[in-house]
Image 1 (cartoon, rainbow, N blue to C red):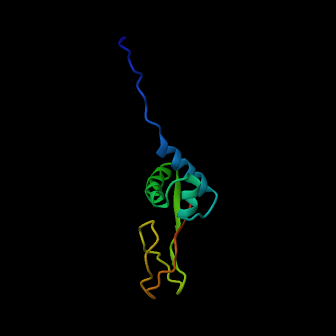
Image 2 (image 1 turned 30 degrees about the horizontal axis):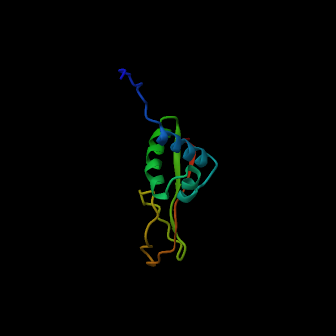
Image 3 (image 1 turned 90 degrees about the vertical axis):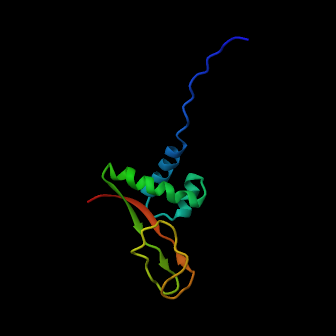
Length: 110
């Protein structure tokens, strides 16, 4: 048996590619997490982690992740003070679970 040396294999930058797909989709306008998951071909729950990284990355180049807050479909309450990207479970005012999730886009810092 010959003594073969293996070439070093660099891991693929799959997260980088997924984030590029999400950024391209966000540049088109307001998108839901479901829209972003379909564009990047990943589960919706994984989108939220990528959005946090995208927020930090685009801030370095003078851009901003815009978030239109979630809203109750029943009474119209807006979750404007909510810091998380995920959709809330129920409305604190009317206690209904009919919540429209937040919308995301990318804009330049003014």
